[in-house]
Amino acid sequence: MAKFVFVTGGVVSGLGKGVLTASLGCLLQARGTRVTLMKIDPYLNVDAGTMNPYEHGEVFVTKDGLETDLDIGHYERFLGQDLGEPNYLTTGRVYRDVIAREREGGYLGHTVQVVPHITDEIKGRVRGAAEATGAEVVVVEVGGTVGDIEGLPYLEAIRQLRDELPRSDVAVIHLAYVPVLSTTGELKTKPAQHSVRELRTAGIQPDFVVARSPVELPPSLRDKLALFCDVPRDHVVAGPDLPTIYRVPLGMRDEGLDRKLLARLGLSCRDGDLGAWERFVGGVENPRSRVPIGIVGKYVELHDAYLSILEALVHAGAALGVRVEVVWIPSAQVEREGERALAGCAGILIPGGFGERGVEGKVYAAGYARRAGIPYFGICLGMQVAAIAFAREVLGWTKANSAEFDPGTPYPVIDLLPEQDGVRAKGGTMRRGEYPMEVLPGTHLREAYGAEAVGERHRHRYEFNPLYREAFEEGGLRPAALSPDGRLVEALEAPDHPWYVGVQYHPEFRSRPLAPHPLFLAFLRACLSS
Ligand code: GLN
Image (cartoon, rainbow, N blue to C red; front, top):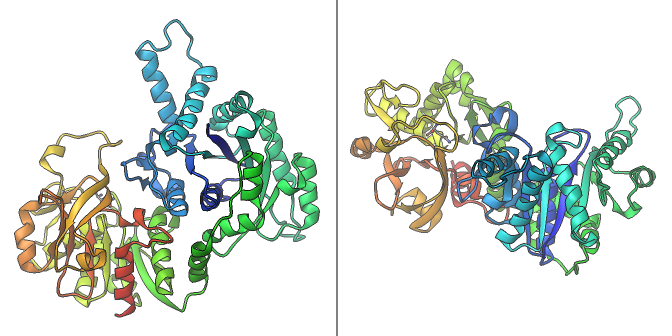
C-alpha cells in the first residue's frame, strides 16, 4: 500500500510549491524510496495546452504527449524520471470523466454531486497514480492557495483520505509565506497563521509547515509558528530564498524534512547520496566564465514562458563551467532595430511560439545569425523561421512563409500535412509527445547525439514542407534528422556555418541537471568557441 503526502500552499501563489514538491521527490528518491509526484491544477481546462503562457508559464509536454503545467517539468528534472498521464490532474479532467460516466449510466438513479462523486473521482486518481507507477510514496501538489473556491473539492478529498487510511499513510505539508515588513525589517507570521487556519476550516491539520521567507527564520519565529499553527516545533521548516532552485533539496535535507517525513509515514530512512547533485549545484553557483545568449521571443517579459529552455541552459552551462547570461530580446525590438537589437550575443536561440505577432523579428534574427556566422539554435518555431529566412534570402522566394502566418503564400515552406486539413479544434490536436527519428550522418546533430536513433518530444501543428526539400538541400540548408519513414524533416542545419541548427521538436523537455541535453551542450560549446 502506498503512502500519500499532500503539499498545499497559503497566503500567495508563486512561493515555489512546485519546487518544494520536486525537492521532496529528489530527497526521498535519493534515500531509496520509490516515489512519484503528482500535480493537481484546479482549473476547468482539460489540460494546459490551451492556456496562455503569458499567464501560466510554459506548457510542458510529457513523453506520452500530455500538455501540462510547468511544475511537471520541475518534477521530471528533480527526479530524473519521465512522468505522464497519472502525474497530472485538472478539474476539467475530473469533471469530464464524471460527466461522461453519468451519460453512460454509471450513476443511474443517483444525484451526481461534488461530494461524494467528484471527491471520489479525485481520490481514485490519486490512488491510481500509486498503482500506475508502483510508487511507495506519492507526493501530490495541490495548485493554487488554500481558500480558493476551485481548491475546495481537493481539500475535501484529502480530508476524506485522511479519515479512510491509517494515520501513518497520509501527511500534509503546508507551504506558507512569512514576509518581511519593509518599514521595520521584521518577519511576520500572521499571514501564515491565517492560511493554516483556513486549512483547518477545511478539516485538515497540517503535519509540517514550511515557512517561505526572504531571509533565515529566527528560532523565536519557529516557536511562534509551532504554537499558532499547532505543529511540533521540529515540524516547522525554514525555507529561505536560495541562490538557485536546485539548492532547495539540500536546504530541505539540512532542515531534516525528508527524515522527519519518512518517520511520520512510518517508513525506514536509508542513507542517501546527494553527492552528484551537490556537485551540480556547485557548478551552477560557481561558474568559471559567462556567455551571453540572446533569446528572441514574444513573451520575453515573462521568463516562465521559456522555463525548460532556461533550465536546459543552466544544466549544460553547469557541465561546461559557464553561466549563461540570457539577453532577452523582444521580437518587436528586432523588427524595429534590426541587427542592432542582436549585438553582443555569442549565440542566438529562438524558442517555440504560436501566432503571427513578432514572427518577422524572429525571421530576421534567424537570417542574421546565418549570414553573420553566429551559433544559432532554433527550437520548433525557431526552426520554422530559419527555413522561412533561408527561402526568402537564399532561394529568393521573397513571399515564402508558414501557412500559419500567411495562408495564401506562394511558397508555404512550413505547412500543415494533408491529413491535418480540416482539423479545427484547438485542444489536443497538435502533434505532441515523443516521436522517434533518424539522425543523419555527417551532421552537427549526429556529432552532438552520438547516435542515430533518438526520440524527442514534439508540440506543433505545422511541419517543414517536403515539397521544398531538394531546393533547400541544394541551396545549403539540409535535413539533419528525419522521421523513420523518411517523410518528415525533424531538423535542418547549415553545413558551412559554425553551428546553425533548427529542430522541429523540443529538446529542452528532456534536459536534466545530471544529464544535460546533448544539443544544448553542443550549442553552448559552439558559442564558447565563436
Ligand atoms: N506555431 C508552430 C506550429 O504550430 C510552432 C509551434 C511551436 O513552436 N511549438 O507548428
